[in-house]
Length: 315
Image 1 (cartoon, one colour):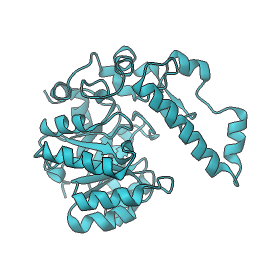
Image 2 (cartoon, rainbow, N blue to C red):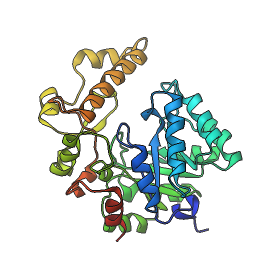
Image 3 (cartoon, rainbow, N blue to C red):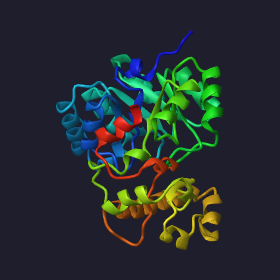
């Protein structure tokens, strides 16, 4: 049986989700993306309070007519705000939720009965099968070219593999920034794509001009993995500062991370410090530049409005 496409699943014009990017995605980007015919997703953790989170959803709703309003929820125990974030999503009736880093069971149980679609990030077959059994509407196949916490398999490996074992749509995430790239992925059997890094250098983003220009000036070869941000390998631009500080935890951090009694707290502290350094670099000019991005910045040649970036992806 032929699977439905992302356009059918979310009732949008083009099979693209503007991927949720921590600290980068904002309401302006969401509005411009949705009004240009794609879906767009914003991390709930971009908002410090529930009041700000609610206001953002309501602002997006009042300025769009599309059904492509998505929220990214981190569903593991480290996100102490998850329960309230989910409650807000349900009350305000967002169109879809992307779950990351944990079991989507609770999200699916609360969202499915009221028609909110649930899409789940996965990096391998066994997790895709599990979330389908729980009732997910689609899986997002995070491949080795993704920005942030990437998978290990290539698009050529993971898309056919998940299609073989899942009856729900498979959406590809990672490495695409051109129309030809989209066509190639769709021909592998993807129902659509989640695209993030090509949108970092947009006019609507509130990040620093230095961060945007870095996405223009650097390319695929300049993306490296670092464990210094969250303790888990994460992609960043290999700036002189990153080269100076290195991309792996020091011997003491590694030793503490392996201690069963304290590793949970070590990881939380590492994540907190890492996010603070990323936040500082994203919004201000500083020599301590830790800029998160994926290999698809290769296709970023200048800073453009969202609508022009989307146009380049579909025409």
